[in-house]
Image 1: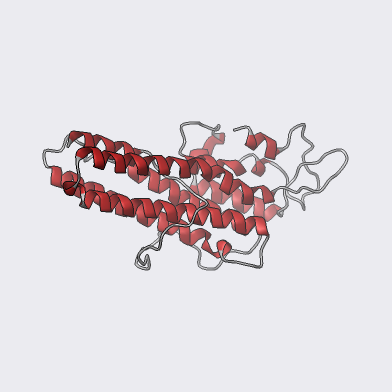
Image 2 (image 1 turned 180 degrees about the vertical axis):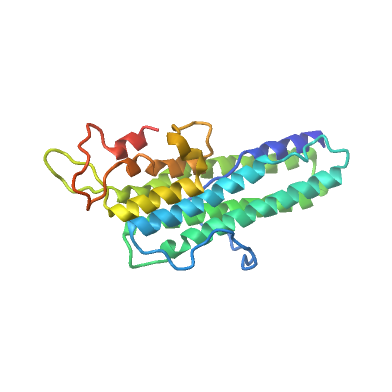
Amino acid sequence: MQIGLLLISLFLVNGAAQSNQSAPPLKSDGFVSCSLFYDEVPPATPFGFSRAALLSLSYARDAGTASLISEISSKSDNPDGYWAGQMKLLKQTKNYYTCAKRAISPFASSKDVNPRIVKSATSLFNIYQSQIALNEYMLLAIKKMDSVSVMEFADQISTIAVQRSEYDAALWKSASIGFDLLLDTSESTPPVYKLSIRQYERKGLSMYLLLLFPEFNNDAQYSPLWSEAVKSAYIIVPYMRLKARDELSATVAPKSAKNAASCM
């Protein structure tokens, strides 16, 4: 069963992901407690969406981090203990994705906001739900692994791992649909690049970004080693260097922040 142990470890290290497809119905998640959450529903604006999206991405990042803490590893002398540890790990990551869903859900179900916000939020919501579904499938595969051959079990694990990586690859695009609304797209001569939000919102969002993602402190540069959730949150970092729409002057730049972010 060493092959099975290796495959499950590789699967768990793969981290967080996403999808535009709806996941199968899941068990109630009403008992999941989220440490960070809003006391009120965020405003239905690009600012409110961005706050909610950053919070959801921070939970997705934590789910990926939890997957990496697989130090029970195949060195364990107790296979039953190893698999029990992996099942606990899958349930923990499910809780993180549940919190990510809750953070973004007000915008995924609203009909009174910008359609791009709804599209972005719905996509992120479905990604997190699909990740939860993969964890459920994985738990089921572990429970039934004694009834199948090693090769069948390996096939199940590798299929789930491939699907997870495909979800992961789509996360950046899903988040950018809503984050791009932070930019003021009105035309001017010469071209002026500024934000669609107010100055106090820009400052608040910048502080919130650094609170949730300490990876960005000290003017950290984009890193390809970051998880997809962290990379997706980094989309708005160059935006925060622009001036808000109510500031006296905006930044005239040879290259828009939007294009700069798309080059990452």
